[in-house]
Image 1: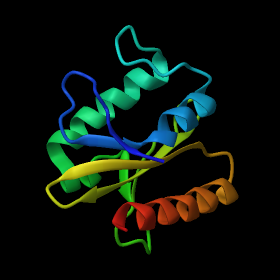
Image 2: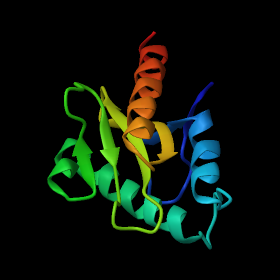
Image 3: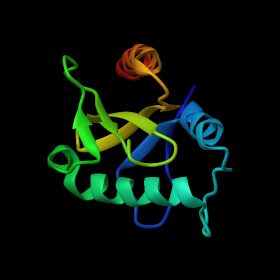
Image 4: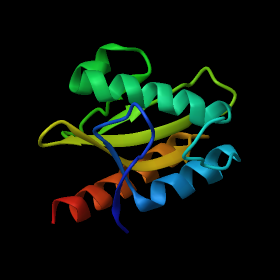
Length: 128
């Protein structure tokens, strides 16, 4: 597992663990691309990441972002009204760097709890 900068024009402080792009691709059945034209879910994610890049912690005031209850360092990007409820769990580290920890398709509460557990392990790896 490696930390990689998401190299898309307009995103400056957005990084992801190397597995996140594969998880996102698996969740939405769309190939991850570094250049446009982006497909539906990746296009929406890039728009969300651009807002997150500018707003950082303040993004949780917007409906598609949330601070995870009971979790000090974990946040989520969500779109429950979309056809596929793809979630991205992320953290914000020193210097305002956003790190995407896990991407998953939420079908039930168990999926969400499992993803939180994975995110915690990955956060621990990141902090070591």
